[in-house]
Structure formats: C-alpha cells, structure tokens
Image 1 (cartoon, rainbow, N blue to C red):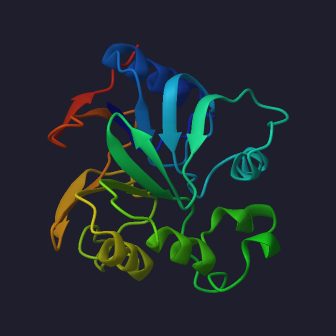
Image 2: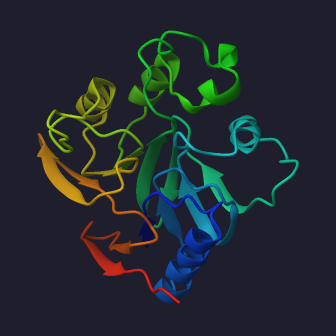
Length: 213
C-alpha cells in the first residue's frame, strides 16, 4: 500500500513528483495525509483534507455529491469516517485545528475557514470502533517540536479513544516518529521528497526517495 504525505500538487513540479511516486510504487491503493490539491489520481486513494485544498471540491466530497470543476477520480475523502482498505480499518480526520472555530458547527464555516475541523467531527470520529490506522493532518503531542511541542490535544483525544496501531500525520512536511501509549505515530515527509510503503499485514512502514525528472 502506497502512503503519501503532503503533496501541494497544484504546483506542476509537485504534481509530477506525486504521479512519479504512484508510478514507481506500482501500488494498487494509497493513503494520503492532506494538502493534496490534485484529485485526478491513478489508483484508489483514501485521503484527508488538509489546511490547503480546493474547498469546494472537499465540501462536495463531504456531501457525497458530484464535483463541479476539477476532475476527481479515485479520490475518497475520510472526514470523521472509516474505510476498509486492504483488510485494514482506516479512519481519518480532515482539517487542521483553530481554537476559535472548534465549537462552531461545520455548516457555519465559510471561505478558507472550511479548512478547520470542529468538535462535532472529533466527537463523531471517537465513536468509530476497531481502528487499525488513523490518518490526521495535525500531530499529537510528543511528535513535532519547533522549540515547543507543536502537537494538538484534540489528536491526543482521538488516540485515547480509538487506540489505533498506527497514526499517520501530515502538515509538518518532515519525517518524525514517536509512540503515544501503544500507538506508533509517524509524521510523513512531503510527497515530492519521499513516499512510503505500508505492509497491511504487519503495519511495517518503509520509505523511498521520490524520483525526480
């Protein structure tokens, strides 16, 4: 299974790198951790929305509607939802955290503020059972440091509730690993630098350099 970090594939160079990772990996399915920005994908891809997306596309996917505008192919949004992927139960929380917007209803967010997740979405995801892999854009505490802990307590809450074996994190565009209780947490390098393989039987994660033309 192919695993990809932030792509920012609205940029032509990043898009070429993203598609090169798909091509070289020869995987039948992929997971992606947000900031995708290109939704016409070679194989079925389960992704979360990041804080940089085409939010009209994301809103349509949230509602299960046909997308107007950019081509959307093989892109399944995980938005406080779970999917069966190669025998794994993969759950995802879309968006990033803004304390001032957290208690607002999703329907009240507009414009760029649609990039955030809200309390109702976190609470809904907490009720999902038997999660093997959790995909988030924000990191839990104890993983990413910039002279301070850049983790988000709302992700800690999800890990406490769901107790997944593996948590895959985007947003920070750097590789880092930590353990949260019994969960292995991995922040992914961006897709234009590295791509990852996930063994669905063992949950072993390995990585390779993304080919550059």
